[in-house]
Length: 160
Image (cartoon, rainbow, N blue to C red; front, side, top):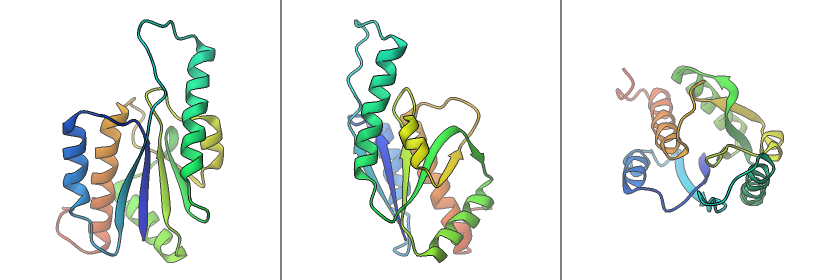
């Protein structure tokens, strides 16, 4: 199975790439993880961002995300209003998805979240926490939790 993490934002701090890559290299060949970065729309502190302009930025980022979803892939959005899962529940979902024979596209929005169009496209909505997390950090958390869930399925001692 292949999991693609479609994330808004590029040119992030080096610690984000290092953290993500630490877990990426641990994945077994039977379950690969790939990061696809979608450039965020330009936000300028000197420009006053109105609610309407923020929604336009989110919508444009959403269009970019939707454009790279592959046909037939299960779409999982990361949203604060999604379902809260334990790591064991995530492992159960991964096992079920593997059984379906579908690859996964997981969507992470930019600093202002995901568009409604992305949310509407989701087969599954997952929430890491009711806390608001910085979107660069979410990449690392998702990579670690996916690795942990795959480790559970492989009876690897990482998850104790």
